[in-house]
Length: 383
Image (cartoon, rainbow, N blue to C red):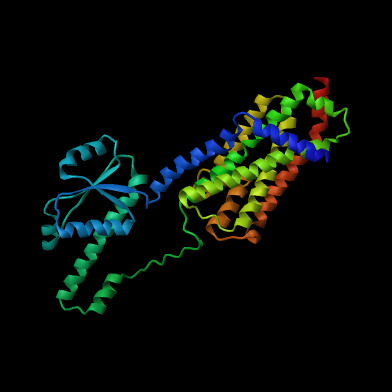
């Protein structure tokens, strides 16, 4: 009963805390919105390609349709009168690319070889690379068709033509994930986990505010046991992290259609993250000497863990040493568990190791908090 009373009190104080909604919900939503828009654009299907068609023939339009179909791109036609302005924008870096089908394209294609121009701003390889690949693939399709016609004109039967064009090596694209990977499957769970760790700031603030106001000192004169105080302080913040993660994941689902997978498995992971974050928050709160010191440690855990734990970038893109360090962070295990469910159709049985590691972090942090708490109480009384 004492634990529930304390939990209710802490929950009401948390809801009244100035800025808690902004830091735990609004700001991460902004991050997901902005970075989701940026990286979904870089992933391919979200790329809009401005183009100028100076030829206007059916052959030119057929080529543009082939580019669009090959790359899954969105083509945006610009008038011929805007060609100079469009090229100037690319040269100045205000626009990343421009596709130009020159006049005479159809006639040149009918007589042999035609050319198109793809203007790309310097330093834009990451965003324009998929477009270049789509244009080259469409051009290669035309080349293969021309080769097939030439071979057939020389009397080679069609089965033999097909065999020649097939080439000696065939690449079989085998995707082992149940869901197609995209940048959003990195961003949405990544920022959800990262901002969950900022709950530590609220925990530190509450502990040290109670200490400064003498609330903690008065605990020594009541029948409330230390573990009950810790439990009562932990529960509302654990509930807050669960709500925060649920809202952010639902936001990613509604805004970008991110596939969440097994909801039960996600719920288990969220509960494990909440337990880990709040246990670490208790440990930080009773070990640091001031709120500012606690904020510094929170930034280290939240940002440092996000960087090396694979919340911002896929872990396999990082140097080997960083990957090893990342395995030592709870953020890594939370993110990998999320992606096991969201990308590889994993269920609860597939994430037991992730949950176990997060539980181990939680147990270690709570043990540190329980060990340090008596000294924290004595400091409150003497202060």
